[in-house]
Length: 277
Image (cartoon, rainbow, N blue to C red; front, side, top):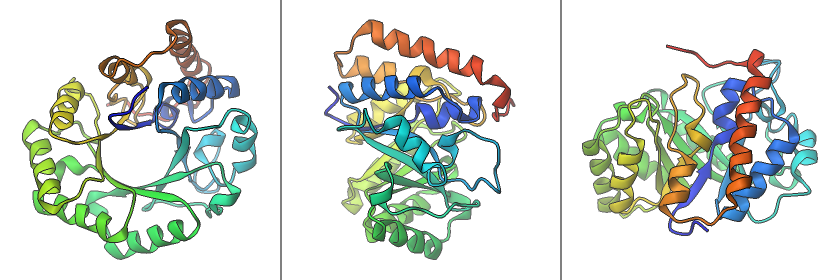
């Protein structure tokens, strides 16, 4: 089991761009059970988008408005591993149920670095915390941030007492220097609850993972086979992390999940919302 890092599996949320967030229920349950057995901390389902503003997607796009359907899929298998979903603070949002009404444990706020508004973030974090959720903030397009900006975001997360602040390499432009500077700044500020969402367009996600993990970063995201992303931008793979931490999983079950994800991408291709650049 993975124990040295806190790991979010983002397979459903990320590959949802290729399926329109339509997935067979059996695949969702099968993947949850494998991740749970592997010691993964969170399985991230999708978003809290508003159906009226963003219609005709699968249920994992609307984690409040399709709450009953999601509960029906996962209620019989959900045990140790928590569920997460993303809330886009700068886009139309649905009303959020209280934690007692929802299977979601963690809400991760998408906050575009260049559109950040401290006051809006503070209000939304407090609202979600008051509703009983674990809350993190994901700063997207953070590869373009200055060190001063990243230090501000780290301190903002600390002040708001969020579970973690994540820095997403949306454009695959993180460098070794960028990662080292971020880790150095977090250390100087005495902040440990930060993480990285590494994209892999340039094939550097594994290198950046190794560098950041060796320097003390312990929170990461990954996806099955690296699939996902609005721009087909790939991700750090779960396979790499399982091999790195010598996770004991049934190879047949794991290969079945890989096969079944590909089948989902084929089956729901007509709902693809990703963009090929």
